[in-house]
Length: 116
Image (cartoon, rainbow, N blue to C red; front, side):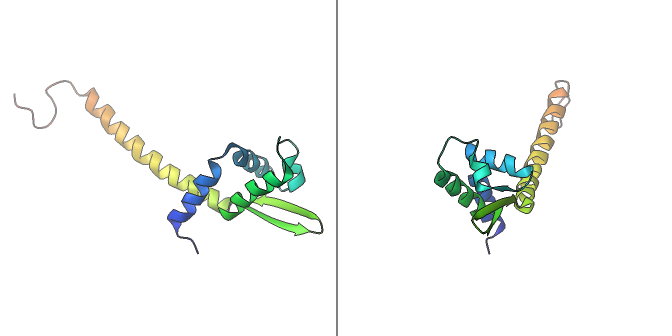
C-alpha cells in the first residue's frame, strides 16, 4: 500500500496533464465508457486509454469491463485527500498573510522591541 505522500505525488502528477484533467471533469458528472470519454478528444483511443491508466494508477479513476465495454468512474477519496492537503497549505498561507497585514498596519515605531 502506498503511503500518503506517495499517493499525493501520484495524484498531482496525474492531474498535471490537461487531458487527464478534462477526463476527470467529465467523469465527475458520472460514469462513462472509454469511447464516450475519447469522443470529444483529438487523439487516438489508445492515447486516451494511456491517460486513463495514469488516472487509475493514481487511484482517481476506477474502471470495469463488461463484455466489450470498459466503463470508468471517479473515486472521490483520492481527490478529497488532495483537497485536504491543499486546504492545509491555504490555511497556513492565509495565516502568514494575516500576520504580515497586521505588521504592515502598525504605525511606525510601535512594534515590539522598539526604543522610544
